[in-house]
Image (cartoon, rainbow, N blue to C red; front, side, top):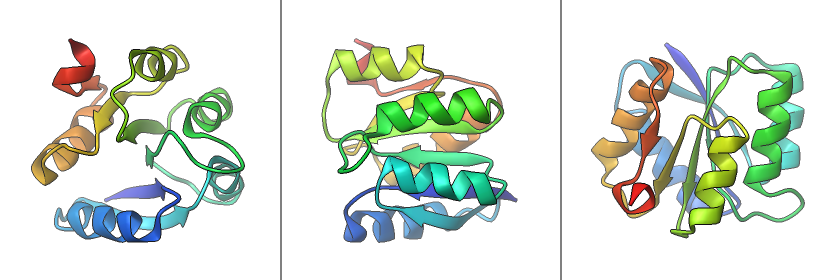
Length: 131
């Protein structure tokens, strides 16, 4: 079972993502954070397999947090999830080691598919971001 950390500043969005992800028997959301700084603090104390990370958050954004996490815990997979289809975000996230980039407009099944792809070493890109 994969241990997942959800990093999203909006509680209602976190809860929705958790409900979607935990429909799969191989995925369990073990931790949640409201910003990148909290995510790093959680990583310092717990073994996490996969992080679903928002981009725009207070205190520390998802791009900066992803860079730090990948430097310190390179085996942890990170999927950037955002409402913004911004080429700069996608390119920077991937450059910094993220394993994928999806828009929040994705279908729920695509989120679960993205977790599997990232965990198996694949690269997940939302069609609009890839274009």
